[in-house]
Image (tube, rainbow, N blue to C red; front, side, top):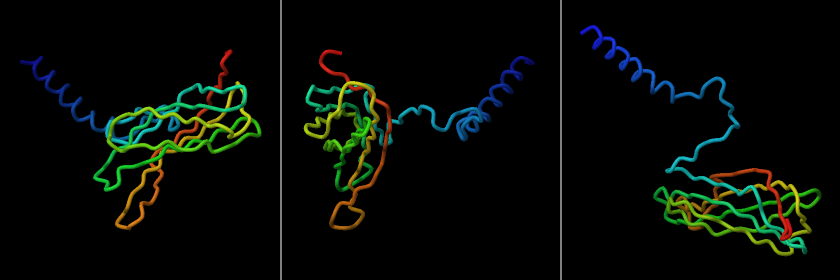
Amino acid sequence: MRNRRRALGALTVLLMAAPAAHAAPAAHARPDGPRLPLPWTDDLTIDRTGDVTPDGSVTLYGSYRCVREAMEYPRASVLVTLTQGRERHGLGGYDAVCDGQRHRWLIDAVDAGRYEPGPAEAEVTLLRFDTGGSFVPVPRNVAGVERGVRLVGGDD
């Protein structure tokens, strides 16, 4: 009987502490540390490596998840900006669909600059278009990632 009471008391303490443990981040947690994507939120990633050709054209890759959330207009765009030395260009966009599923994206940038194999910085943004009661869909930034990438050539 005594062991049952101890077990019941320990279980009660654990159940009471569980919601508090999830309510606030730990004091030692880094706010800029890695985060786990949740299956019901918008999310965006970029791969650590991209491709570069001898003429300086670049291809970057990643994935996204865009949740529909009862939107009338389920479209979105992935926009990429790449910086390497003095070269900084918007590489264009990728048409995304907001269906809650994870999808791969790919940006092929030809004549966007003279990039070469080596480190670069990429900024990727997921824009969702919401009508918000107006006739014209308005873009809204729902996810963004800044990351160092390595551009590799065909002989790397």
